[in-house]
Length: 101
Image 1 (spheres, rainbow, N blue to C red):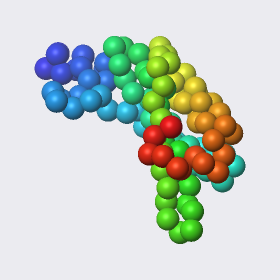
Image 2 (image 1 turned 45 degrees about the vertical axis):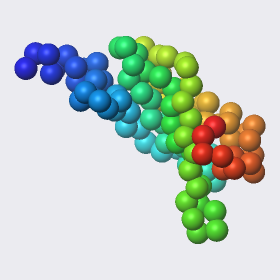
Image 3 (image 1 turned 60 degrees about the vertical axis):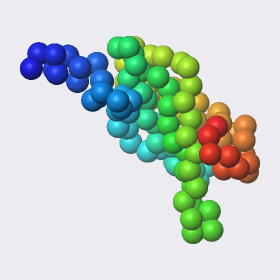
Image 4 (image 1 turned 90 degrees about the vertical axis):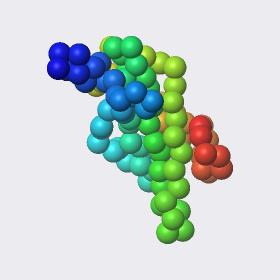
């Protein structure tokens, strides 16, 4: 029981599956929705998220994961939003041309 508690605090998931992403509220930026989803890794949180937009009635999505690690989920969420805004500004109209950023 103690082992399961420690694993849940570290963000570990069941064997064979990757760690569960931290849930965060979506943010809208330039008509695009950013959903930060930092990934727990080794007691820290990796910058990650999803960028989506409705185009011609269809939802388009792209995911991003960066090497940046943070000591708290809140810091990772904040950085994930910042990184997503940078991706949106840099890629512009070509944002959804590929599956991953």
